[in-house]
Length: 236
Length: 214
Image 1 (tube, rainbow over the protein chains, first blue to last red):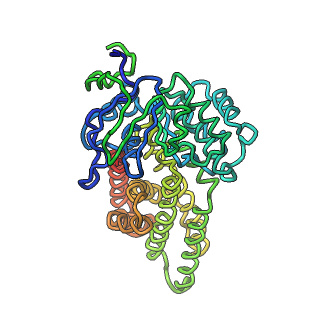
Image 2 (image 1 turned 180 degrees about the horizontal axis):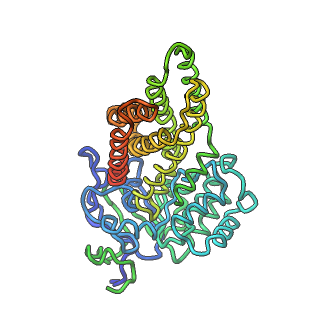
Image 3 (image 1 turned 60 degrees about the vertical axis):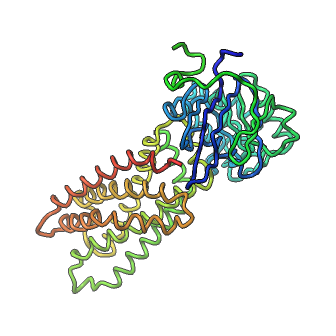
């Protein structure tokens, strides 16, 4: 049994919309550095669960913590620790790649931002097109920029919702290289590409009708509320 | 400041929304100028109503667009998952809308000065417009957020905003009348505008986190 706190943990997590339980009493814990595939049919509650863990959606009941920070008690610190990549690229089409990343670097107060931006734009193959408005980019290039945006601030936990959308094989390889194979990063990725999960996933979290039907074996319980507002690894 | 800088950058890059709002307002002023007999009538008592009607529709037209664009592209969510308080995002958006709308209003005052042959670019009237616009954008920015996820969002903003804007519009019209020489003067109505602007800005910053909650 590991004493190390979970990178992502939920206890009795529930979200209701108009009396319908979209996520129902979800309890699980993901070890640090694990790469977990979030599987389930359409409408299983995957996006809602990711929304709760990224503090975009307020849970109706239960508790969750990401990187040691409670979604209810410490959302700002939690947001500093997560990277979010969804099927929408979440970048500004009127701005160039470099302007997009400069904006998000200011929001996240990324140290030595210029060097980090150049490093990432080179890594995703957009350095030569760094000054072009992204509205002329293909869907795949938007998603490459989205990868750079999501990891710009070196998050400890990546929450991904169908991240392969629009990516060509080279783009998917890039995603694997920059995110899925990074040993320091914990990944929870909703995907329908079940066959591909064997290439990166160390475990599965399966949802069906909002209920967890399969979870990685991780015995560490969710930290108590007081401890949940401390970062992972912080001494109390 | 990051949100303000980015939003101003976006407003400038995609200025078609604001330009079409300005074009619409300029045509409205032109039609009003044809409707009034400028030789036989003193148009000054009519101008506050003309100006605030025009400002109202320009704001509604342009304000909703900026939120709709953010919502459709998912960039609003990208800001919400960043370590920035919702109140900061709200104030950045209010400032952007304030700067953009106020610049259009100044241009409209210049145009109205020419069309109605009346000096409108006075310090007092510009102050009235600036404070009135602050209250206006504080409220409509909050309401745009509420409406941005609704299917009928194009209709929702005016329906929600217009009843709440009634005190501001009355005060704006009366203060503008005072600034243009009405005997009562602009001071009491200007005070109401200041109170409205403070109430809507503080209220907006407090309510914005609830407006973006899901």
